[in-house]
Length: 138
Image (tube, rainbow, N blue to C red; front, side, top):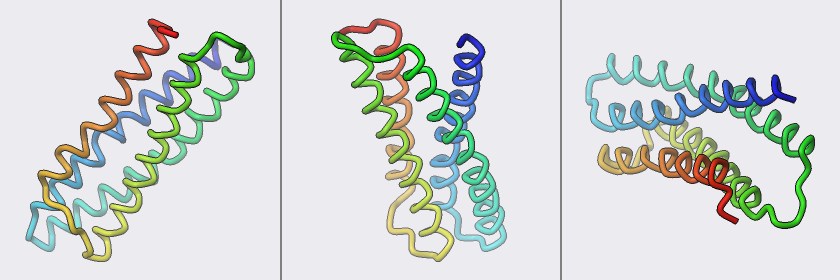
């Protein structure tokens, strides 16, 4: 079970690297007016999103393995809260994919400032997950 935990942490860390970087690419995409730069940034964002998807799946699958292996009983409200945060992260990942498709078709409706704030969501969710796992407040 410890090896499952090791790989879970590895894939979560890698997934988060993408969750932190992809919206940063959106900031640059929202600011650029040059077609060559736009094409380059879109290519980077596409490749990153395709790389992130298996990491998300592996992170969640190994997390579920750990969840089922350790079991969940009464008095583990922190785990329910963590699972809610993970569901929000998965939704954030999917929203990033939708935003990427909007950039690809030239239908972006947000400013670079929006994406700067949007980029903070996974940081907040990561803080919540870490606090729940370490402190187990309820």
